[in-house]
Amino acid sequence: MSEKTDQGVAEVQHGTLDVAVASRKAIVVATDSRRSGRDGARTDDTKKLFLLPGDRVVAIAGLVDASLPNFPEITAQIPALLEQAIGRCGHLDMFFWEDPPPPADYPEEFHHHWGADPYIWLSAIVGPIQTVFNIAATYSTVDLSRATMDAIVAGYRQSGEVKLVRSRLQPLESTPRGGRRFIGVARHHQRVAPVDGFAATTIGACNLANALLFEAVPVDFIPELSSYPGIEAF
Image (cartoon, rainbow, N blue to C red; front, top):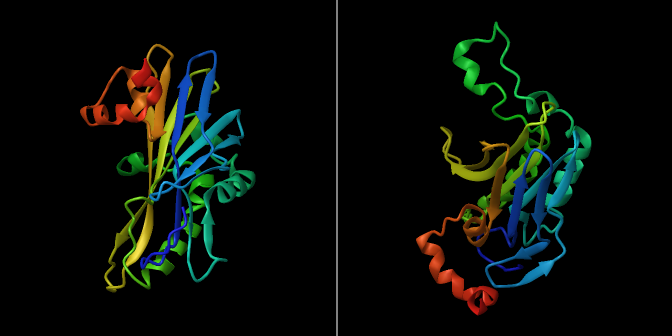
């Protein structure tokens, strides 16, 4: 999508759907390559699946691209940034991937911080995202409602246990004590608990996938069914 707005950020593009299904024997992570925007424009040229050290993968959905109308050289191309970051520091989270306990002398009041933000390669792309949105915010209010990036990290621990983690980068606006507004990026990580060695999760436009995987059809999804010709025909 390319739309000129008065919000500073001229181009915001999004990925749509990722699904991960894992058992003790195999992990399947499926993505599309589509970018889609509010105006309905779509392209199928976006990389959303990346290899990580340790025979792991990461898939992304949500924000994939943000740039400025008057400064085309200032842009946050998420797939390219992520690939660079993984190449530089993708191996640095392997220690925490095994979920080690904190050291015996680690202060108890800090235990909840231990391993809470382990993916250095994901944190590495926060700077460019903040830069684009903060420059845009100097001109006018920035709409952050579509600025979230989600990810699924999938692999096995050395014990052979399946591990799926849902991660999120969420741009948020705040006004520090100085009074100047600032857009930071919060990071959240949530482990998907396996049941009998099986785990599954989805991100993006995933109502249909969730209905099929988890046999749960949310009420607000019923009106969407008419947009799926195959289901209507069935």
